[in-house]
Image 1: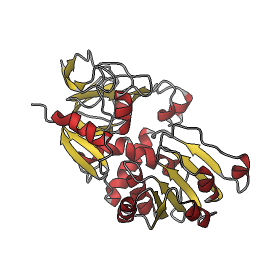
Image 2 (image 1 turned 45 degrees about the horizontal axis):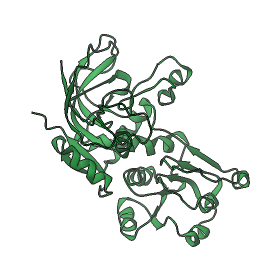
Image 3 (image 1 turned 90 degrees about the vertical axis):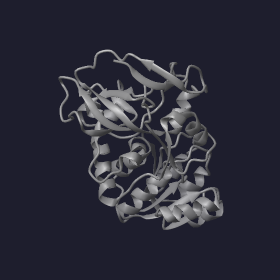
Length: 337
């Protein structure tokens, strides 16, 4: 068979129609007919070879929603006809200690959908069946794709670190990740403060569920919030007044980073020792956590805010995202004939 896709042949190059022969379907893999695929900043980073690991021709796309059309002989749980989502990971070894304890996303031998194969800007994708997560009833397939990267990136640490409904939490950066964090944490029951850089985003943050909103770089406001927060989630990828955010943590508070900040974060030891505070980071989440997140979204009617483009306009969608115009995620609808 032939898989049709859109691929780039050089760093930062335009995507054009391309096709490839995927070979025999492995016994433990499923094949998914792509209906929708989100567009993520990580797709741009890979397209531009920012991480020096991109192989060309390169097919982006790791926020896939579609129907299973084929399964290998060893596949369990997933059946032909199921609507599933596939995110960053396409496989993990299933036998290392991390996989055995349920942390498949921490597997040293994990395979990425777009780092080790071809992504979802295509009519089909393949992955190990464990990484194909069924969509529950009540979730809109057309907007669900970004949950499989942006959504699990922010839901994962809320789940992993035992954030409580009684906690006071902060979300730094209101964008593709941050807007979902606000929705999750508001539904979780927390008192939520948004830290954002513009007045327009402040208003939007309040509409998305924040109880309070303040300036990300307002050091006077940060001083006034000293000792307030049990958990601060950093979704931004820029330099921040780190001392102010560490000072805003309550005793045993945690500052957690999921945004790809590209400079060292200065952390004085006594800022952590005093008050027993923590600084941490995380990648996405395990298949079980993805399942929990989807159930939570269905229960609380949480969905990403998306703008949609047909797959045939993939280059327009990428430029829209690159220009910072996306509100808040971009989804491609498969319009292959």
